[in-house]
Length: 193
Image 1 (cartoon, rainbow, N blue to C red):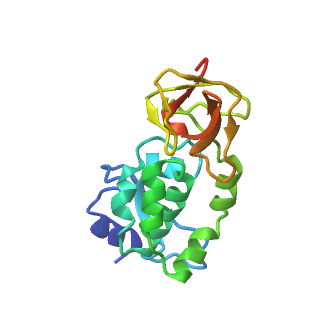
Image 2 (image 1 turned 120 degrees about the vertical axis):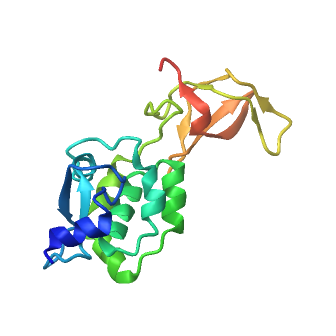
Image 3 (image 1 turned 180 degrees about the horizontal axis):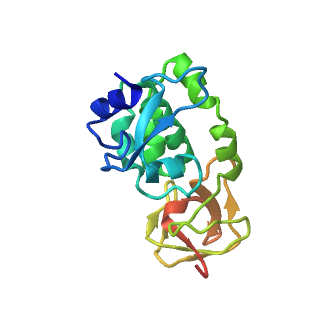
């Protein structure tokens, strides 16, 4: 049986990532000296374009919460790479923490350099996806209780001159009523956005 026939049988004639219907393409998960059924997957053209960075990643990848449990090495490697590219999303970061790859699969997954490229573009984003910078002014999008202080930061509160928390893109620091607090970026909106 030819490789294409094997992949069609294995996939049930659906994309092995998002379960879309045809047209489907054979995707060779690089780098591999030879491509076999384990290192080749059948995917839709939309998945291929986003995997190969011909298109920006869209919010369509919740299917990775299922594919991360696949027994097929190529699917596991592609899933790990995509979760790494999406790890600024809390659901992707949570799944990445749960996902297990054997050492040889992890080496294979890291071999294309997606990690280094992702780290270089990792940014602090507000609840609307706008990039936050040190010194920006933000608005709180919900009322927040401040732990260890008798302070409640009300929705709509303006916080000026924020500071980004280094190493954690989900947190910023800002002063409210004279007290410096840590604020989660998911609860803020950059003023003017």
